[in-house]
Every structure is written in C-alpha cells, then in structure tokens.
Image 1: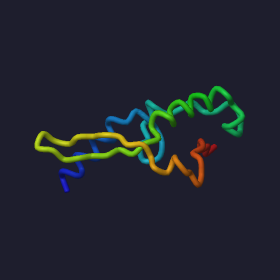
Image 2 (image 1 turned 90 degrees about the vertical axis):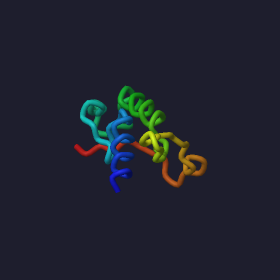
Image 3 (image 1 turned 180 degrees about the vertical axis):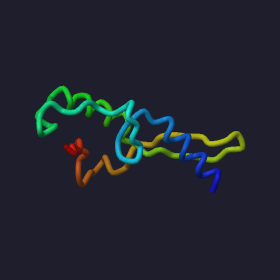
Image 4 (image 1 turned 180 degrees about the horizontal axis):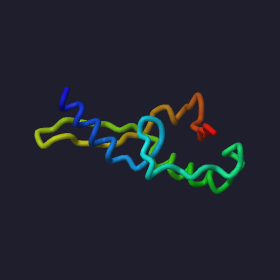
Length: 90
C-alpha cells in the first residue's frame, strides 16, 4: 500500500491544476465576472486551455526506481455522453 500511496502522491504533485480532488489554490482559476461562467469569454478561454491540457488519465507504474507516471487520452472523449463544463459554486 505504501507503493500505491507513493504513486498517488507523485501523480498529484505533477498536476498543475485545481479541480476536484486535485485542488491546489495556486492553480485555481480566477472567478468569472458573470453569474454564468459561460457568459465570461475570458474565463471560458482560460478554463478551456486548462481543461484541454489536463483532460486525460494519469497512469502510474511502479518500477524498481520508484513510480513512473504517464498520461493517456480519455477514451470517453471519442463519444462523450456529457461534455465537460466549468463548475461554479457561488
């Protein structure tokens, strides 16, 4: 279990994003200027750039030298049921 914990820790530290379980205040997007984030073009551009960068699976493998982290495209993007969209909690 310690090897798995080491993998999870390394993967989370490599991600420079702030969403869901990967929340990091230093990478949080600024608040949208409109009640509906989709109406703020500047916010949506920043959100889309970050979403495009991190919309992937993090894959970890344990090696004799420690954890190895790789990324794979999400299979669900080929036929998404729901498209990703920004969340707004205010």
